[in-house]
Length: 141
Image (tube, rainbow, N blue to C red; front, side, top):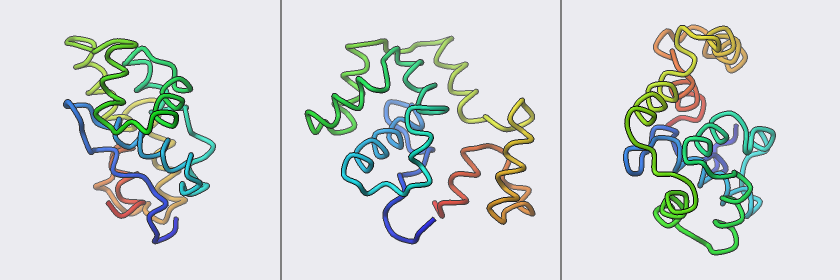
């Protein structure tokens, strides 16, 4: 990764108690402006982007269109998701929050996070146990 602002905000940043949404919006805007580091391009709309959109019951491509066509800020984008899709509530929201925050910790992705840590030169970091931890450490958040 570079030292310039071509990386999105932390996945741990929240709006309405939802982590990751701000990061996804940041990536959408940065990609549209040609400012997103190329390392992120292959996963746009996949993995955590996809899971976040599934939670909100919106299509990623529709969210991209809404943000890029209207210039919507984060609050407007989330409100659009709530109106177009769903505003998640307990117990679905609670399960999703647990999953997204702990993804990679003693689950089916544990081996992948260890591989990613090793590839990034962070293999010795025992404090990195989730993908949220990994992304923040790799990006210097």
